[in-house]
Amino acid sequence: MQYLLLVFGYLVGSIPFGLLYGRLAGVDVRRRGSGNIGATNVNRLLGKKLGFLTLASDLLKGMLPMLIAALLLGSRPDAELLIILTGLAAFAGHCWPVYLRFRGGKGVATALGIFLYLAPLPTLGAIAVFAATVGLSGYVSLGSIAAALSMPVIIALAGGAAALLPVSTAIAAVIVFKHWDNIGRLRRGEEKSWKGKGHGETE
Image 1 (cartoon, rainbow, N blue to C red):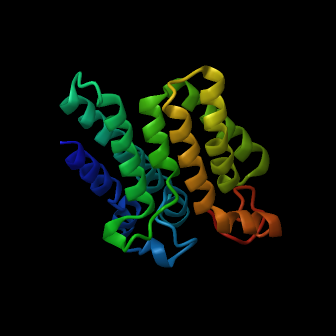
Image 2 (cartoon, rainbow, N blue to C red):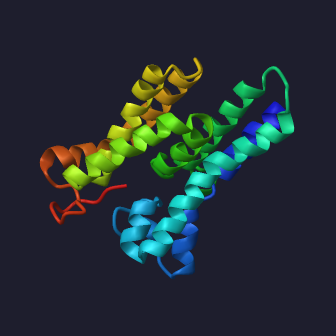
């Protein structure tokens, strides 16, 4: 069963909701804006409603496979580990989706869904870091990076489950890697800002 759960998590995580919603609106989000299938690019191209729908969908595809795994596994001694691995499989699916030749999103919303399930209170702290960073800088990409990097720190300070520290560290590393182009644009002052500064795109 454990292998089926991992495959299920990966396939659900691979569903490119941003691309699908864009196609319903007659736009290929991979060819417009930043070219990313995530909520930020969808929001810029198609408006707040579809942007929010993409965010919610990407969040749920991280959380729902874990909820289903928890229901199926019950009180098995390895249930906690398998639930976490199912969430990681969904995260990997979003970042490297089989449906899009392994060229996917940056994983922020899907990671949010995973951590809202695994560690809701530390996740609220990371959300606060994201909001403060975006509010002060205007850069969604910088907020995403700051929130991802803060998550292992917050979990360590909160004394969370031992497995959560390496999981949050690994996810943070992937999110930073996925934002590498954004980091370059931030350093050059070319990143697109909600405050109207710069010329690049994010997320």
